[in-house]
Amino acid sequence: MSGGTEPARGMRGGWSRRRFVGAVAGTAATASVPARAMASAPVEPADAPARTPSPAPTTPATRRPAGPRPLFLGTYTSVEGGGAGIGLAAYDPVSGRVTGTGTLTGVGDPSYLAAHPDGRTLYAVNERQDGGVTAIRLGGEDGRHRVLGTRSTGGAGPCHLSVHPSGRWLLSANYGSGSVAVHPVDASGALGERTDLVTHTSPAPGPGQQGPHAHQFLTSPDGGHVLAVDLGTDAVYTYRLDLAHGTLTEVSRARTRPGAGPRHLTFHPGGRYAYLADEVDNTVAVCGYSPATGRLDIGEAQSTGTGEGTSYPAQFVVTADGRYAYLANRGDNSLTRYAVEAGGARLRLLDTVPVAGDFPRHIALSPYGNLLFAANQRSSTVSVFHVDRASGELRLAGEPFASPVVVCALPL
Image (cartoon, rainbow, N blue to C red):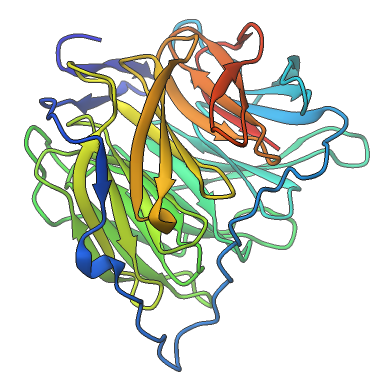
């Protein structure tokens, strides 16, 4: 990539999304959370909502998986050479071999995907000027997937969505307009009318930014808070989600250093730490998190391990046992491997591995944790890696799978 920006992607309706990229900053290979974030969290108040217990740091793949598993592929449909909808595929959970099974049409620009906790419904953003979110019922009695409908996100260019652990609320982030939205989910998995929409009007946009750019909206492991990562305002917002009405109340706000451009946050399975990928200044940071208050404390910037130049870090994933973390670097076409230390409070850079593709936009671990999938936007391929449980090392599992302008790979 050259010229300091991610090239515009032409979309129907005359809209294109650009992401400003700033200077690269050199940092140390290990970073920790601020001292105050490492203190024991205070006791939750008596009126705090019931929370989902943090998952135990165990490895899910103690038993051998069997039979092909579904793989859903998010694409851009309104760009030259793009897909025709959501790509459908199957993968062997042992070998990692991917086989295409078709395309689910009728879903425009489904650039990010998420599954309902019960595994029966798939959700996709429609990354367009008039943004939407679409619900898809998976494999009924006839084995066919069925589109349940689309709802407006109330903003432009939604690029991320997630389902609250309760399964009752869908959270989405509008990149173009810098807002986050909440939709109710009914018993069938279908979406109701939006219950809230919050636009990030402060702080002021960071260096080189023209406005807010909400890039991610997710639930904390304890289930008590939802967090929005905004690249444009260099901030992560914490909200309390009213589980009865689907409305948002801001309770905390964390600021990155100016120009960092935070893009993606991933929690350690212990629930007290998280890892933040900063797209604009090519850094990452360890964050401390308080389940009681929702407060996020962002630690010092650290290296992506990609050297000089801008590598456009995109996404973190953490193994279920909490021992290793991986980062996708789009400009460097690599995956960074970190050892997670001190119970999640520290990342130690180990190495980088070529992704065997161009511009890895999204990465995901299989449910068993033995495979890692990378969706490579510019090469229109999905790379699959074997994950060594003891060392965290990655080994390419054969030739990458071809899929038009693939930007998200969701293995179930």
